[in-house]
Image (tube, rainbow, N blue to C red):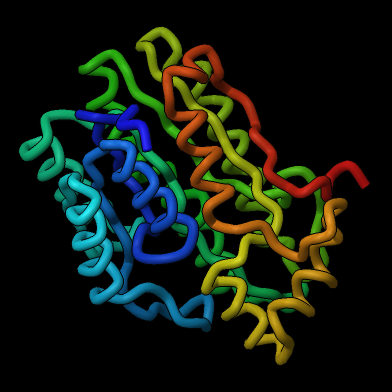
Length: 268
């Protein structure tokens, strides 16, 4: 693989497994130094297994096996003190942050009128406010260096209503608005901001969602996605490929855009 990201530093939230881990490893193989930030413990929501400290440790080993450097942090994107400490240590060690991949997020089902206020707040606080909290600590670093790329992991739910996922859709629509606003605010500083919008991805999160519904991942994928191409899910590798392109100089004039990876779902 080309080492197109040699010397670059990528700060990735939700890095312990799934899409975040795939992106981290792909960037490491391309030469980037990786900062993995993940809650790495069970929290009240969403109800399925999240990443663990062991996942973060193995991520660090795999990044180093790819002949790159890594820092890993167990922290919640709702915890400003933890974010600030991680960003400060990153800058102290690596001197810069070139890419922020805001990937941390949760998903769980519930009819809108039946959701508790606590459940609603958890979804919005992690998926939307968490991205903002991380961004507001990373952005000053990027402004100082007059360069950087922010990629927010949104969803096809940014473009449509979704049955029993009103809280999830609201968080992802909000994330898209935040992305576009950052693109406008940060362009004078040479910083690009984009969002990616996958259909369902074959990750531990969707395995957990299926288990909560008493179904197989295949059944959930076929029922909820309706992709145009004949696949129930895309793979985390597909998300990683998109991030590598958008973060690279090949996309140097791409900002404020929504990059859809949906196997044709939105075309239906």
